Every structure is written in C-alpha cells, then in structure tokens.
Length: 259
Length: 267
Image 1 (tube, chains in turn brown, yellow):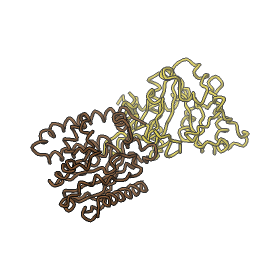
Image 2 (cartoon, one colour):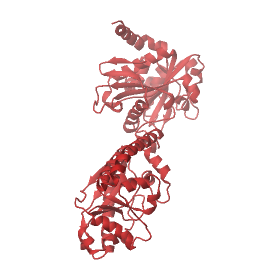
Image 3 (spheres, chains in turn orange, green):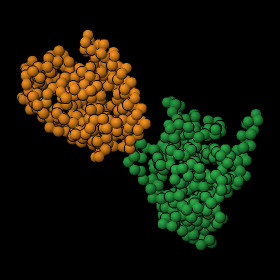
Image 4 (cartoon, chains in turn red, green):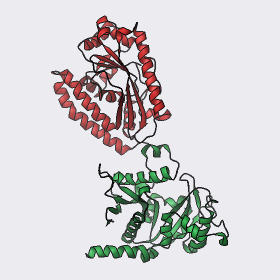
C-alpha cells in the first residue's frame, strides 16, 4: 500500500517548502498580520499539491467578513485543505500550541487557541470575539474532535457561545462546510477500513499516520460550502448548532452517495 | 544499450524507476482492466501490476515518442512491455516466476545463460505487428548481448476453463511439443492435461487462428511448448510453458533485424 520512496520525496519537499516560506512569514508576522494569512494560504496550497490532495469546491465560500466557517473534522489535513481556499484563521485546542513546529506554524497562520473544557469562560470568548470584531474570519471544527469521516458527530453548541454578544450575532455570517475525502487519485473509493488512510481520529499517533499518508497516491477532497446564515435568525446557540450540523451531515451524505 | 528506432517507436530497456512504473501501469491496464485479473487492494490503489520479481528484472519498453507529448511523461508513452529475467539474476532471487507453475529442471540442466520472458503486453491502441516486432527486436538484441542460449516463459491463453480451450491446447500438444530433453512439465498439483481432443478432431487452422498474437509470434519463431497447462485464477488465464532455443530465433527475426541494424550502422 505504502510507497516509501514517494513518502520520503514528499517529506523532503514539504520540509523545503515550509522552510522556504518560514522566513517571509516570520518577517511579516508582526507588522502585517493579515498578510500572514495570505502566506499561510499559499503554504497550504503548496502542501496540498505535495501531499497529492486535489481539492474540489462545491458552492461558494462566503465573501463577506467576518464569517464563521463551521466544518466537520476528519484529519489534520483538513487544515491545509480549508486553508488553501479560505482566508481565515483556525480555532484549535490549546495543546496544539505546544506541539513542536506545528505550534509555530499555527501561530504564523494566526490560529486562535482555546481550552476545550472552559470554552464558555469569558476570556476565551473575548479573544475570539475580538478577532471577529476586527473583521477577520474564523474556521471552527464544531464537533470538537475528529472523526473517521463517515458521519458527523453532534456539534458542540458551547463553541457557538462566541456569538452570544448581540453585536456579533448581527455582524457575523455563519457558513457550514462539509469536508469529505471521497476517493484516491486513480479512482479507488475511500470507504470502510481505507478511511483511516487519511482520517486521523481517536488516539492515532501523528507521525506514523503522516508518514503513511505521504506514501499514498493522493486523494480527492470535496468541500461543500452550504448557504450562509445569520446568527440573529436563530433563537439560541443550540438551534444554530443543530442547523449547521444538519447541513454538514446532509452534505456529507450527499457527497458519499455521489462518490 | 538496446535502442532500435523506427519512426516514432523506439525499443529500449527501462533505466529509471519511473519507467518501470510506466510498464507496470500498462500491465495493469491490460491484465486487470482488459483481461479481468483479480486485483488486490494495493494493485487497485496504485493501478500498477507489481510483483516481487520486478525489482530484479530488466523491463523492455516499446515507447511511442509521439504520443501524448503534453505533459511529456513517459507514463503515457509506453505502448508495449515485456519482462526479462536471466538465470544469473534468478539464482540470486530464489528462482524464476515460471517455477511457481512449471518444473523447469530439464531446461535448467542445460549449461549456459537462459532467459525468462514474461508479463508481455501491448497497449490496446497499438495491437499491430509493429509493436510486437519491436519487442522481438529488443529481445533479439538482449539475447545477443548476454549470450543467451535458451529462452522460455509462460504464455497465457484467456480463460480459466480448460475444456473451452480444448482445441487450442490439443493443437499445441500435438504440433508444438518440446523434445523430451528440454520439456518443462506443469507442477504435479497444478497440471492440466493438454491432450483433450483426439488428433483427428483438431482443426489446425482454426486452432492457429485462435492463438493469442504473442504466442503465435513465439511459435512462428520455432518455439515449443512444455507438457501440461496451468490454470491461473488470479490472472484469469490458462498458461502453457513456451521454450525457444535462440539459434532458431537467429534464423528468422535475428537475421532480419541484424541485417537492418548493420545496414543502419554502415550508413
């Protein structure tokens, strides 16, 4: 299944690509944070190409800022996939900040870190709210964890607490996004046991999984952008979470049927 | 080393991993997609026919340089391939591919270098004489370069029901059986009898017409077949072992190609 030479070649090009963009990113990080997201997007595109991910967009990402993109979460690869099409920062669990290299790269991509247990705490929401008020878009993996990509877990309504302040509920557009790894390059469907080839969930170790993913032919990834909605149209954050979850789950079911 | 040009078709050995992969991709197209071999997951994932002998073998390629120029990739340009394995290589690798189906002891008793041909196939769009001729000319040059005295290999008939292949198998046994001193035999557990019809019931012309082109090429060069066929369920074929002493080849293709080569070199 696994081609070690290919994996080695991709690991090398990934390293060079990352090293090459690191310096420009570090230079513009402080003076011009928004430009940093552009560099991150370029980096993500390159990474998708190197890893062999062909991203197909269905629907259009909301062009208004700030937008809160709410997606399901299948793999660490979601970040480069979504990052390659969206000018938006990610919301990640705080552990990520301490991972070597990945922590640095996420900070360069303007990632916001939250403690999962205490999300409702005022300070956490304040950081997210401040970013949204500044007009920046965010990506939120609303399941709060990753799955094997066969179905969608219940969205955590607590994560939508950031939209509680009335001014944000009025200003922020919310767009549910379905992400699906449908087939390998060459046509073999990613189903059943093969899901674990790209999906990264449970207590899988990162390094071996990345190494094996690099040695595969590549995959076709489909991104379905659902209709954007406004936060003020929903009575509660629960209703909003439920709506987004249904949209994402229906989108996933449709993509799986089509695949 | 082997480089025979004729218009846009050239024949040569694969030098790079990428070129071997292109040959494996063509084999996948022909054996799995066209002829219905049963693919495992790895084969389906990469769409290449890979086996454990590949790294040790030489891969002869017929390349159409005019095909699919953009992007200029070798993968779309390999239109014919065949796999060559010398005895000296096989000894290091624990045997020939054919030894999984046939007892080659009578052949290997002969001293000197011998060569196994296998996995030969031609792109469906190129099933004309030209490509097979190129393959043979490449083989001829390889044989010359390595001082090979005897060639052999499994030739495949489509289908896994020996009774449906009865006329062809009977014809081969009747008219092309190898002499006893160099006659391979199907392994005891897999041996399928080739004498399925009485001689008077075999329509020679029809049987010849039903032969696959590559096997026809072998026989036309003077090849003989071993005793017994073997059903290969994975590849959806019935295999016979073909033996070809190279002095017979020299008499035909070799002469033809070497005269052509010499003419070119003289010019």
